[in-house]
Length: 154
Image 1 (cartoon, rainbow, N blue to C red):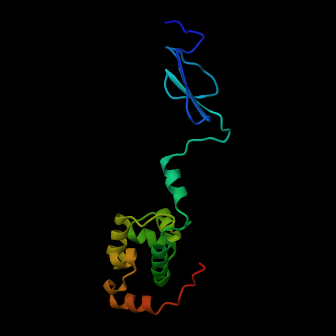
Image 2 (image 1 turned 30 degrees about the horizontal axis):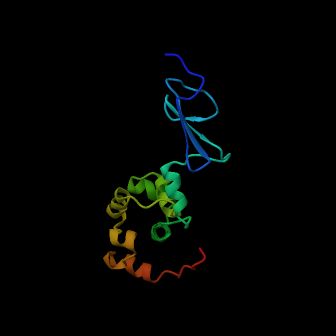
Image 3 (image 1 turned 90 degrees about the horizontal axis):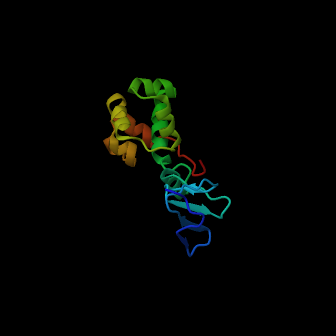
């Protein structure tokens, strides 16, 4: 099949930053984003870029640490035990990087991770996820309630 010099059909979107040109059997190699071998998408906006779904979701959160409440409880318990992140994670059969992500509040504590902490240290799921201290063993419950108040600026 031979390429024609002119497009068989052309369409200009109502948004002037996007124009789609359909060619008959031609793959036009220019500085455009090729969506398939029959059509091309050209943007006139210089800083245009496609974002991944994850990037869009992350940009929706205004809080840099969306799980800081869970993070505070895990950090508190590790410091109460007097262990480093490596020691605490290793004892529970977890990776230090996982624990670090949970303690910084960047990622939510996974169910598998919470169950590992429950088996190893006796922390209840209610406490880790919701902050409900009633399900903790008595010594941990008293220690949690007697802890120094955390300032809101942290």
